[in-house]
Image (cartoon, rainbow over all chains, first blue to last red; front, side, top):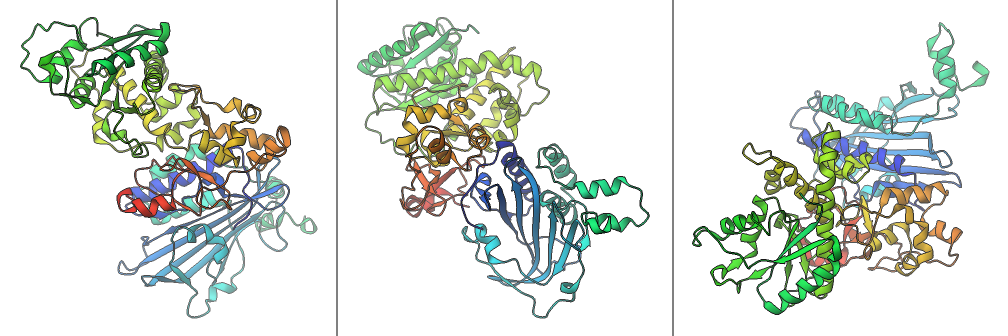
Length: 240
Length: 363
């Protein structure tokens, strides 16, 4: 993602710096490495409209451990976050976090084995749960990892050989899975040994992260309703 | 410790000693005194190691309670004669034992274009005579005042702080506890420095605090203030705000950012620093995209943006620590191992990178 950078309040960029540094520290404590763009975090806020800005940042995690993967096989992860802010209040109005799991095919290429993206829009999307994850078989688009590409990240991300059945899966409701939660879950699942320390470290950062607008969902949860799944579509007034 | 600053000068060339002494006195005014090293009588045997002898001398009047030692790098012609062959390392070793900070300066002939190197590991602040006695003295007095400020404030900060983390303590010392995490990113893993932080059972009362003050001062001077990230110098600030150096030097423009000026220990009115986060808040609170937009809106409609020194067709935004010039992301490299992680605006311009890469420790 490229464009004119926007200066967010220090508290907003500082929360992202804290989160990403805590993540990096956890990864390094686990003896792994994470490749982050070296551009300043504050330079990752790009104007996307007259009153909106997108925080765009990606990460490359090489040779990550996974219980289900044979040790002989290298598992890489690429994460790309696009979080949109309303710049008058700097509240988070939209978030898409792409996550690709890839296995090594050669030194310079990896092949997709699982692709997810976590979505949230403050006003909701028709026929999509408010917070949801979508599985598909697409590698993260080059435009979303341009910040990594400019830092000599030259691994080729290849699509799977065959079309994956997961690509036809429905949108699955999730809790708030904005970037902070995705990183949190990645550490919990892949690096359980360092998770308690990481969780403790980010605890103080959580309150500083931008507020997510989810009024429709909150109002729905406050009401009594037997069919709980309807909460996930509370942003659609026709169903209220 | 008295609030008055006491500087001890080690200089072996009489003419230089006299001129540096004079310049130090001029800049110190009534804030304290300057003593040349010498004019003492030693009671102990004089064939001991230099550092043992210097330690004893600094521990007695009139040198007792020294705030800062200023020492020439080359002390080989030292007088009195039985100190002939003295080196700054011996002075630094004695100073280190007594937790007295030390500023060392190089002679006129030594090139000073290595300032971008990490000096942290050398164990003392490095100044230069290249810009003359007066500038050397001005900078040394700023250092002395800074260490004195830290010494005066540290006991109170330690009483109030429940944390023993140096970053938390330094953030509190600077009056911005919320920056503790950012300051922690300036931590440099140096085992020599670690020794200064470890409490020693046999040390006299107050020495651990002095030692911590010395450590924090070096850290602040040589890392936090040196490499743009948490704080930014004028070139880095202009680059970050997307303002040309000329426009940022304009007092009208500077006044927009006055509230972000750093005024803590080692603040230098001739070479000021700004809190980067406060610059962000000034720009953001006016709903401007960057400093240039804000300045054009408020005080200077024809202000120009900051240009990359490698390719002036590009906006800068960052700071090349070797050339000390504004540089763009595309024409520079980050991730240099000796740059503190918190210094996210500090980079190396591509031409310098290409020249020095094998020595820069790029990761």
